[in-house]
Image (tube, rainbow, N blue to C red; front, side):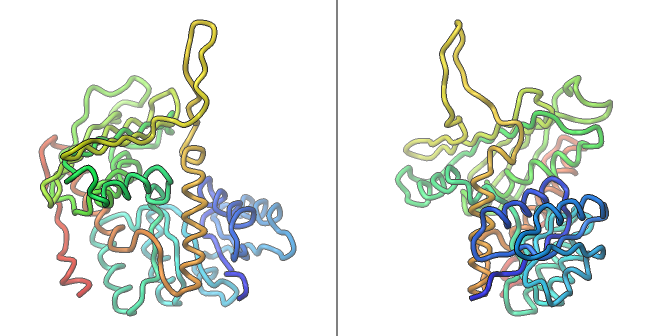
Length: 339
């Protein structure tokens, strides 16, 4: 079977990282085209990664999606462009790995889910890469085994070293907390029915008006609860931790697996700079499994519905952030939508 020919829309930090991954680490796949509003950046990447076959720069992302030279698409473009590009992928029957968010709001995300369902096959996989991280996968397996009994609580910490001045309060919910939204739904196999987002006095590292850090509580349909601290200007490094508490025990991941040193009156280890270091292996597994699933005519990861559900929770979270009060998640009936 010939290699899957992949086109990437958006080659900023995430898209460029995926381009390198396809070329250097992914078997059964070949990067054939890239598209980005910054054509100079796209040209530089295409030139650098062209090997036995050239990587084309296609200025119009919709043209990249539509060309017969591309079998499947990775969307790493800004979230506001996703809806149009996803509908194009569906129109052309192109499997797509879409980085979060699915779209910018629950209504358009639901429209994407409905459009895909009408095709009668799943083409969209959403890039919630934590499901592919070996530690998260092991935690999921442990909880599903029933060894610890019924899961009751989930505690999450999500800290970034720094974010730019344009990273607003609602983006902390939609672009950062969204990962814990998906993690909670996945680990506890239950929808989030209500969310409350609190914010203490902000760190001095952010501009006036930005609420960072934030603390959220999720109430689940199965009676469990989850919380998350999101702090995107932590100043120290990138840190993601998760503890599940069940009836007969608890399990924690993200404590760090690097070398622990003791010297000169101090002990400790290194903290990664950003998510690409902490979740490098997860991204490798995610993309490889996606490529293999496309070859089988399937997806192997978070679906369009998962992207929609996360968008609905984050929409409620932004509303709660403005009031500090619990907000009920307005989620469509899955059976009514998907049958």
